[in-house]
Length: 287
Ligand SMILES: [Zn+2]
Image 1 (cartoon, rainbow, N blue to C red):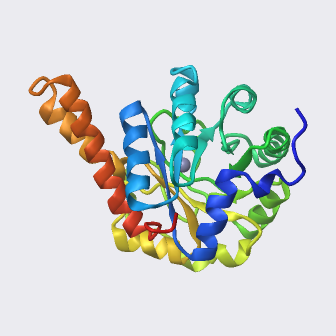
Image 2 (cartoon, rainbow, N blue to C red):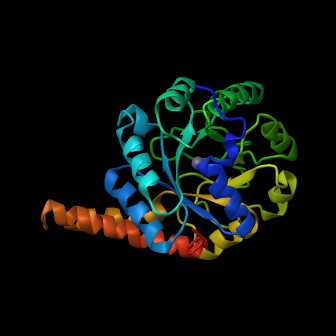
């Protein structure tokens, strides 16, 4: 299938992030594991009149066989606000090709950070081209964000390595649309505020060439999130910040209320926490 040469002007992830960069707000890019969470995220975006990115780990393909991705993309296309569907931390080349060929992703994070730098750059460039030929935008991680997320194993076990200006240039040369810089942020548990390096001025290094994705936000207080947005982050990867109340609710209510009630109340928990973070990220009212 031939793709229009200016497909980027209609790619949903690119358009959502460009608008956020211009408007100086952040867009919640929330991981979903099940349909209640997908539904809650979309209802929150519509209630807050906010753009949204729904993210999945490759687990949504390898376990769910893409079902949850298709469901989310269908709901996103019917939503009254802009919603993009993104594949986070795709580390397996075959899975990336499968996702690009068969699933309705607007963007894919091509994460080859478990290879040495030369291989990482070569593979990233090749996979970026593969995705772009199918109208799919890409994100990559120069340097290395330490830690591990649910469903994504940190295979290399390397020391935290902060993104350098050279890496910024090398990765932009691969053709990616977004970069997730490592500036002391960590996946998994909150690593604390002190080790975050705001002096690197990644924004200045990157300029307006690509948009910036912030990873590793579990446990972030609102003021720190705002500081990252002020420093240039447009795509705000969020995992537990919008799901904690959902899990506490399940824990306390399972077996005590009818299953339908459990689901409905669980969705409501996701809606409320997501709306809070859309307010904090200042994307509410921007759709
Ligand atoms: Zn990440």
